Length: 294
Ligand SMILES: NC(=O)c1ccc[n+]([C@@H]2O[C@H](COP(=O)([O-])OP(=O)(O)OC[C@H]3O[C@@H](n4cnc5c(N)ncnc54)[C@H](OP(=O)(O)O)[C@@H]3O)[C@@H](O)[C@H]2O)c1
Image (cartoon, rainbow, N blue to C red):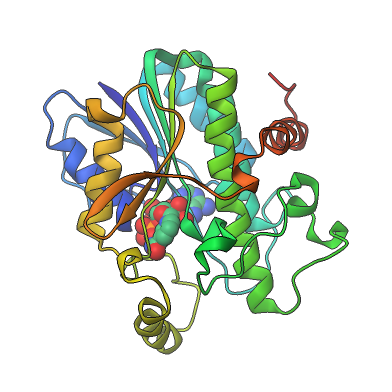
């Protein structure tokens, strides 16, 4: 089984990659900007260079993956959360560029290399859903143009903290909508999205001052529903399960969420379930990365 993965070098993804490599039938190809020192050495592990800040890098990575033959599983798990607004190498808001556009482009470039019955998993987040009432400012919309160029958004989030938090939750909304829209366009494959719960010990908040995160990581679990906090071993295990367990085969855009000790099929937000908005996001994202809509 050939598994291609982003975000396998830290946190939830690294844990999932270790679990997947324990299976003798798995050949794992990861895209990484930082090597793979936390993963066990294995002849079944290939590390290809990938800095998702740049769409050109994405194209090179996809070319290299294609040379390696059909892809049975595509795990789009990389993600970042910024403390200050930044632009990507291509001039897009960086959270949206890395978390959504880069994964969207990778999915598009590798669709033709997916093996029959292949499975695609995108890591989203419960922060996408205003009804979850998380401490992260929720999305206001899923307009690709405004997310890519927030200066064009007529109603931008006010203040650095809210701006960055909303950029993050919006990018995760886009991941979930992309899984659903991919399923609608390619029912021959399995497409899932994943909410790992709040996992305070990963590297996701590395951009924030350590003293702040030490406080925040203690306070957030108190503010959230008790069953929404998870651990790296638990959420990493569930990401690996979503990739390989037969239980999750044939999902058509299903959203799986860690709740307490369990992984449950959940309903994402109203906007995440808006089929017209998902089609528009798909088409607008295509334009932004220079592809035809397909
Ligand atoms: N932790 C949580 O509470 C939580 C909750 C909901 C959803 N999530 C989602 O879970 C996923 C994994 O996050 P995590 O919490 O495990 O955080 P993490 O420990 O920071 O892992 C993030 C991964 O993404 C990679 N990455 C980030 N920017 C990249 C770039 N420009 N190019 C290539 N790779 C890049 C990182 O690579 P490097 O090792 O090179 O930095 C790392 O492998 C993310 O999609 C995140 O949004 C996390």
